[in-house]
Length: 478
Ligand SMILES: Cc1cc2nc3c(=O)[nH]c(=O)nc-3n(C[C@H](O)[C@H](O)[C@H](O)COP(=O)(O)OP(=O)(O)OC[C@H]3O[C@@H](n4cnc5c(N)ncnc54)[C@H](O)[C@@H]3O)c2cc1C
Image 1 (cartoon, rainbow, N blue to C red):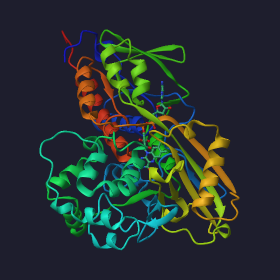
Image 2 (image 1 turned 90 degrees about the vertical axis):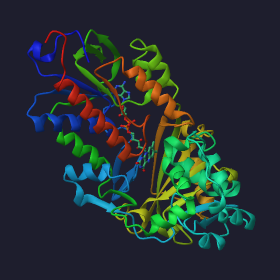
Image 3 (image 1 turned 180 degrees about the vertical axis):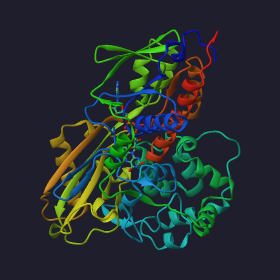
Image 4 (image 1 turned 90 degrees about the horizontal axis):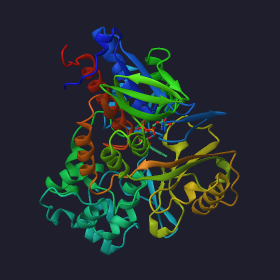
């Protein structure tokens, strides 16, 4: 790439790279850059600029009186190796814990009653456990069992998650099970979420003979480390370890990036009223934030970024003495289909899911509210969120009294990206605009996966690319 400004080498200083946002994506990018510099004996001036006074973005853990409350993510999936690899590199492997053993971890609210999901996975692996389940009518069960006979869709067109499951397993299985399950992960509307950009492996399974058949063979294959995992002290431990792995002074909290401008071959950032000149920029901000910053740099890029919608959610954690429950809690939590007409979209029994989340006599429950089509409650005042969630939870769990010893609301306004049908085309447009901006990379949850391993992968990839670019930069005339 030919750029006209003098290179850092010509200026007699190390290359300067700014990373915008100190969530898991930004910190992973900074870690990779710093690692590259160490390995190759290069000097780099790095700065991670974070608007909030706290780093970690959506990863936030609070510990009080032996209770560990996760405000955002509570676990990562082992089947995507990037989180475990990073944890290992950071020397935190001893702290990794898996879920408690449980045969039927998920329940679904059906006609006001909680019923166990016969098996938990991307799709059913066998008709038998489903035949005995009260979750589906006989008609619904029969339709699901016919899945291996449903012909596979030809072509490569994107479709919604809802359209896929309706085709393969029938409308009832979609509404009662798969829409709450997959919609819950993205806090989205399955009628609009893109299959290709959220769960492309489902389409692959369809091509290989159907969901039931593929799930059956996957069950037989050995899986090294899968399932959900977390860190003993909570996921903030990963953020702390990443920050510790960076040279002192690199992470600047309370540094809000207010403007981004192109100045010849470099970039100029406005931060808390000051201007910083850097050679390369990695944005790890959510798409709407980076869209606003780039509106004067590239209008088309800014518009393409704005087309990725975000929805609001909130998590409500409640610690209750176990004596208040008439029956022990079953499994790791429950999902609520839309037809049940509740405001909670799902709940995790955190103290059942992972060991050490609360003292023995305490149950820690985390409820989710908000998401596509039902954002109002997530945007309401804390007291209203708490009141609604407590009333529904008391009813669902059939409790006589409901006196939480601890309650904590975390709000995530316009924080959950929605990968809608056609998301891949938006990414292509963004990638094409970026070709005109050497020295600028975009990473984070808005693009190629929202999970922590996805964000780590995308952050580290941006770090590698930026390192190669700033260190191998060739300038006109040099
Ligand atoms: C409630 C909830 C539960 C979730 N549960 C899970 C889970 O269990 N497992 C899982 O794998 N994933 C989960 N996710 C998804 C995952 O947590 C996120 O996708 C991931 O943490 C996003 O990381 P990020 O670094 O891309 O973005 P963010 O964490 O949003 O970080 C972006 C950072 O940029 C900063 N910023 C914004 N504007 C500016 C500016 N102008 N200047 C400087 N800084 C700025 C923000 O303050 C923030 O710190 C969950 C998400 C939510 C909301």
